[in-house]
Amino acid sequence: MKPLDWMPRCFSSCGITPLGAAVLLALSACIAKRPAPATPRDLRVLVYNIHAGKDRAGVDNLRRVAQMVLDSAVDVALLQEVDSVTERSGHTDQLAEIRRLTGFHGVFGRTLDYQGGGYGIAVIARFPIVSDSLIRLPLTPSQVRAGGSYEPRGVLHATILVGRHGIDVLNTHLDAAAEDSYRRQEAATLVQIARKLTRSGARVMLGGDLNSTPVSAIHAIMETGGVRDAWPVCGSGDGFSYPEGKPIKRIDYLLISESMRCSEARVLASDVSDHRPVLFRISLGTEH
Image (cartoon, rainbow, N blue to C red):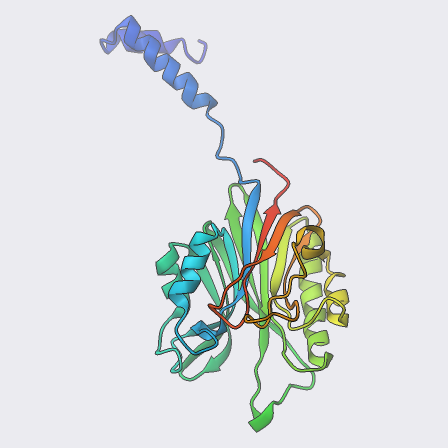
């Protein structure tokens, strides 16, 4: 018996008229041919240091950050300087608040215990985040700041499911010291992580506040990981994003793997944080 030969017999025994049977057969054929949901060809990706949830004047900025994400139709955002229930931020879970205001998925990477809570980096996305992990960026010897404090750095690795494809997002915030010695070590670890992912065929976006300019040794190191700086290909203007009032340098980046393309990038005029946000349009290079 052919696969559909049983259907007329079933329709007759169930009291379904020939016209009704024809309608049901047409519907079943339509359902059978329905294509799987398409993967968006472009993602709008934001890289943004949110200054621990306050603008330069110290005014809370989470609601304005969330509104910027919505107004800019962002799909994925890499956020740095995010507080989690610290004393200085009024014990607010900043990622949870941004998620509530945007409706996005989100994950937090705690790089530092601070004031009864945590401080670090976060990734938010319209799409499901199916895995995440914080990878430490070790230094030898450990960096000691004034007063004996030490701020460890890390990279948040989040895998986002876009349609049927996974996108590996690496979000980081590198050391802010004047010279590069600590950043060189951090960049070397980042390169190892990115290279492993790109060699496996993964689509990789690596970004964040790198605290270094395009002419620095850090930039050259980063591009040995199978990822390339998106801005020179598609950016509008000089890309300066810091400080927000009158930016004088480009330190906020997105680097992408070879399978991806950047079609547009621009710095958004904003005083919501002490950095300006940088928005990229990235093509995944596939339809499904």
